[in-house]
Length: 459
Ligand code: ARG
Image 1 (tube, rainbow, N blue to C red):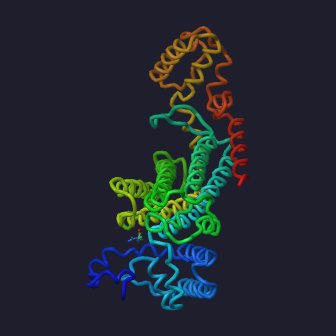
Image 2 (image 1 turned 90 degrees about the horizontal axis):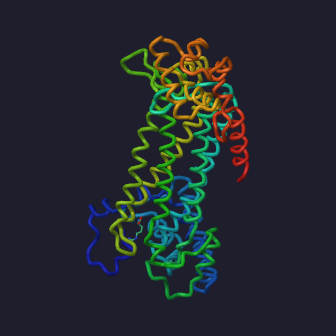
């Protein structure tokens, strides 16, 4: 097949090069955006008197036929035509002849590919925002359901202070809230129009970039044609956002894995989202959570991959930049699927409330509350910490929990301790005692639910 650049060449392209340089196998997923961009470009060419009405009509008809063929799986994608842009253009010329040959006027694949990618990412980022919103709703329902479930909170993976399971789950809802904000920010930078930049320097023909930008619902026209065709920072934004989302999902996944162990026994994972072992009949494995944790590495890799591709490129377009697509498609697919699976799985997780509560009774978990109790009795915090530390050591030696000590035993350490101390030594007492903003108290958790609900209602 004759290449569009054949005029300057004496030889045909080597088969190996065609195979090596093709991107059609993965960029065919930009077909819809490619057609959308071409429609806007063709309308502009007509409005500017560069093509006539008849030619525009032919182009539009041809493009809509191509669209139908691709949708029906009838379209023949050809490797020797390299990418989606040349595949569609060539098919158009075959269908409508000379009019089709005018479509590429004042356009280069350099501005075309980046236009397609921006249109595609705009759509996908919005879809991911919706998926996050959905997952947040799931987390909120769980938080409401478990507003009375008490569990141990950890630092260094050691029991630290009792918390409400709701508070723990809402921590993730807040992380996802910021993930959404980040994506919304990114959308602003994605939604800028490069079309009409040509190969790098613009065009001598009387094009109207403002018009195509409006047709394609871009917010602004990129003011510098060299910048427009040569940067991929908006793709990196998406890759970074994706990496952070996966990091958050991976931490949640890790907790699900840990909590489902026999040792923890905090949760029971649904059979529907677990797999067995081919050898050990008793096994029930948390594979989806492990896969999310595992895929996070790949999504980080996608970000590093494109950063590395871009770092040494002189302006403007270089073919290296074709390497932007596979990482970003992979990140989009992985993030989308991971959000979906976590959202489907979470409501089916059974929380073992008794076990969580039981574990929250142990490990001198209310020691900090005891120290703060002493502070309220006007003991300086450093001394209160020291006294409480000694009480804990005594408990360890006696094999008792704090709440099991008699008042006499307490008073051996500080005469400021009296009967009411027992009310703050239980996990519930500890949680109810929290009064600071953002704490694990029930009021604070309810306030968080209110704030998140409000934000979820706003579009
Ligand atoms: N397939 C190319 C890409 O993905 C399209 C742009 C090609 N431009 C060029 N001058 N070879 O980047």
